[in-house]
Length: 288
Image (cartoon, rainbow, N blue to C red; front, side, top):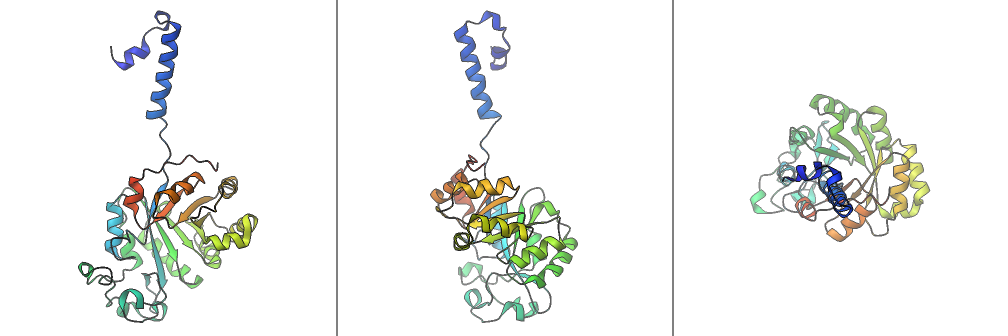
């Protein structure tokens, strides 16, 4: 007799003990097959930046290959109005040449090698444009977190380039530490999520009430907080109550990741998306 035949067998032929066992088994099967634990999204920080040069096409492609749910990159507007993927204000750390990104044309920035510093095998890797980065998005899955390091001046050209790229708004989010950038982004592109990024120091200085006021004032869709064991369930509860997203950055060890999962986060940003994926983080949504 098959499993399905067992559970369709008339109850009148079963003893009370057998009925109880059958109900227990059905409940167990439902919990395993129908109600899997809700997993948090894994966000690849500057791509798979532990193994490939940060904010480059190889890093983003590797992150998607390793199963990242979301990939995050940093962006500035150049002097010739190109939006480029780069983290620092200057190129010195990763290129060895000291150019200010916002004061330099892309024609010059593209000539820099930003891969060799990581490993000789990445020699020849260049600074990509926003359009090139968005082109790495898989056809049927994944989101991209666009972290704006620039001032609000970047918002208008970003809006134009996103419309030209044709990526659905549901697959994008704008994130930034700069409150003015979040407010400007939400005003210009209300259809795209705008998430305020904050450090634990900022959280401690403002307090929960201050953080919630800030999110409301800039019309943010959520908070991306620096991960810390000091984060308590009250933050997640307040965000959920107000219908806001809850993300955290940057976590490379499983214990801290599990703590943030217990606090109720929607996603965890990491340099090592494959490692956290193997950790099999499952959200208990304790902060709900």
